[in-house]
Length: 544
Image 1 (spheres, rainbow, N blue to C red):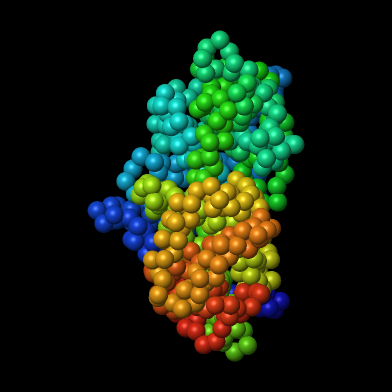
Image 2 (cartoon, rainbow, N blue to C red):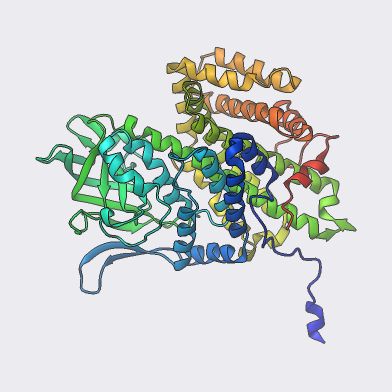
């Protein structure tokens, strides 16, 4: 008789067995908007195939397994030889291999490559976020290496390859390679000019040996790394291969792996260099300008990765509410829950729309778009990544106690959510970067204002927000102390302008009323009444 008390009722089925791309109307519309018509059918086919894999039970198991079995550091082999390797669960390799084969390291050399890759990164990151780090680093290394044509010719074909090879051996023997990055040190953090790692030149031009450390080294199992070190001419960028051309291991001492809050599947390490062989990338003393394009590309991935987490959290919350009954009806039909879900959906749509607009600017590659990116990327990185954690926490709450249980996957999303705000420069770094662009590159501000001005006259709240922003930009008093406030407004105005131009009227209306018009509370679920919240929620629903 006791078994009858355990009949399962009123539980939402798992959100599994669906096409993550096609079920995301916002993303699908953005791809259609930004991809050239002659490429659209192929792009949809690629993204739908990836979306079906991302939404499969198999990929969800891989994500769980990769996080429940984090990487292990192997400093020595059984005989005592130093090997400095990182051992990953097979699920990690399956996730990473799929990402590589899907072209998530290849945006620079194919038409519409950035939009297609960004959309794919947003889709595939919803299966598991940790392995996005090596995908991002490998993709972003290309523009830095292009400062040295010889290095680019040697490495770029392998960096952009869709072949994944996990073994450590000379890069010349591999069809595809992965890259990591080592910038920060214990004493400096984001202040890389305080780095103490030294680079001593060898007899061959462009070759050096490095001595020093890196406090955070991303993806330490990679085939190569872009590293900053102090040469005679100042801070310089170097390429450090893990395996030398003769097959010997380069000196790359992995001291320990970081025990992180989230991102458990991915290895982040402390490393030591001691006579480590390296090739110079760019000129001595030009380390930051050389690597800055890599940083910008990874910042866009931070925006995209946060948009992916937000989208998956919203999809899970709406899916749960569509099946769960309480107080006499489905949660999704309850006015207050509908307000919460619609508010979350607005935030997610704004993040996705902005990420794809930035990717389209990379594809256009005009002087105007490059100037626009100079402000838009750090502003978006600041705001979207900061909105991720409160959104995921609220979405988790929509599931009640079920959302606090590991099996549902929401706790993993929550642990992951602060990361992109920290990687590639935390909030203050992004805000100060926007200020530098405003002060040193007036054409960047002009490009930004031209972009938001395309929606001028369509919504009075947006027009008011643009006017208030111009007033704030004209006041340079205590500008650094006001930097976060200013950059937040710039990001919101940009998001609002994009939604007014491209989103359904009910979405644009709700966003402008709340985020720009001030008719909003301090928590999600405080949208003004009346708005067409039902349509907003239904638009965000992932139909299985």
